[in-house]
Length: 144
View 1 (cartoon, one colour):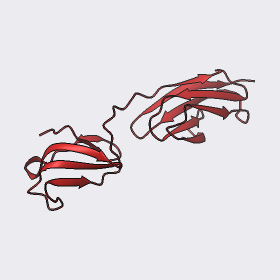
View 2 (spheres, one colour; view 1 turned 135 degrees about the vertical axis):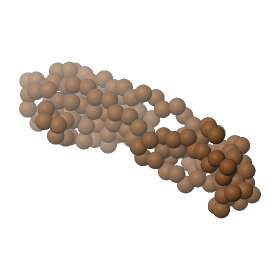
View 3 (cartoon, rainbow, N blue to C red; view 1 turned 90 degrees about the vertical axis):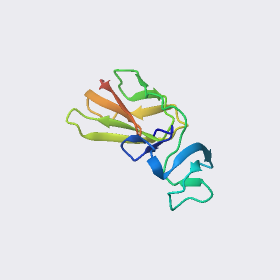
View 4 (cartoon, one colour; view 1 turned 180 degrees about the vertical axis):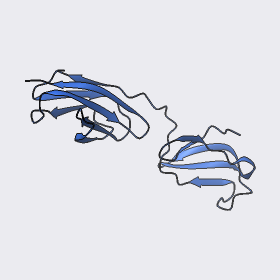
């Protein structure tokens, strides 16, 4: 039975399905924790038909597809990257051999990042925006 509640195990989203162990009637996010109401008579860790899930993530928001723009491209000293992220993400610069050259942690409140590429050799690099659930890449040319 699909109750409309999904959980993230670090690599895959799955429907929360307790089958005969528990029927979910409703659920609510309270202070970042997920509480479920229903018939949990067969579960040992529920009280008064309320179950608390201690999974690390909860959201009833839709995950927006990642996108980003690099300008200027080609870049000589600085490249500005604008993006739409709604969760902690990383911006990676990878060389033509697949080696990670630079890595930046991006908080969800950040929408623009200026990257110093003056220390990179001329050539093509892969810039990757990566969140827990998604990854998107674009080429950036460093040219002086």
